[in-house]
Amino acid sequence: MLSCKDVANRASDYLDNQANTNLRWQMRLHLMMCSHCRRFMRHLRLTRHLVKTTVQQEKNDVDTEAIYRRVLQKIEAGKKT
Amino acid sequence: MLTLEHDDQQCAALSMHLSITDNVSPKVPDDIPLIERLLQRDEQAFRELISSYQRLMLTVARAIVGDVFAEDVVQDAWASIYTALPRFEQRSSLKTWILTIVSNEAKARLRRESRMVSLEMLDGDTPGSYLDAANFRPDGHWRHAPAHWSQESPEALMEEQQLQICITNALDLLPPMQKAAFILRDIEQQTFDDMCQILQVSSANIRVLIHRARLSLMQAIDRYQETGQC
Image (cartoon, each protein chain N blue to C red):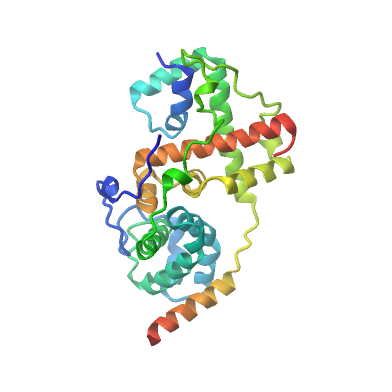
């Protein structure tokens, strides 16, 4: 029987489908019975979603032109040496 | 304690010889028009590539070689990518190919500088994290319930600008290896095999890094829910 500590330790493996069948069943059984772990797992899922959405909304402030120019200069310099 | 190493052997089973020859993931259909333009030396296509991948490449480089050399490494990687494009055989996705090149550049730089980054120091346990033994009773059950969130609707939460600031700050404060593992997995949807190859740590260590990163980010949201601040 898994403890809450076990569930907290392996929660990401469960979400990422990296837990074996036995562990998955034991996690499911524990989650059915434990409201604290259900909350923990729910918040972990939500965290993943919120961070992903936040990052995807961030402005891309990469100075593409400057980087491109430096790449070309580097290649040219490499040809000369 | 987790011991993290840049471990070629652990990745060896996953066809770990990293080279500019692509050999890992299947081709992604979305890449095809861009690849065709790149192969025709379309300058605008290369600019688009820089715009799409510069930040991700910096994240990977920082994870391997540290902050001081990361920008330099990425610059070298772009030059390698530009030069190697005609040899890109499209057996892996463009993203995996690019990230493999930046990973190779970072590893080469690490060797040149003879500077082994102590990942154990950089990415160690965070005191007070969810996994802290103090949070559990001797029988392994929670000593206290995980923090209550007054709002659990993703749509409503995403409307809270202060929360987005807290999330961005928390992500920036993660140790470089954790941040890279989190971004590659949860934002970029990379497979564990590809991540093992790109970051040069074992799959087991990658799983630990991702979990720690998620828990740190979750605690940032806990703090926001409790105080309204970061």
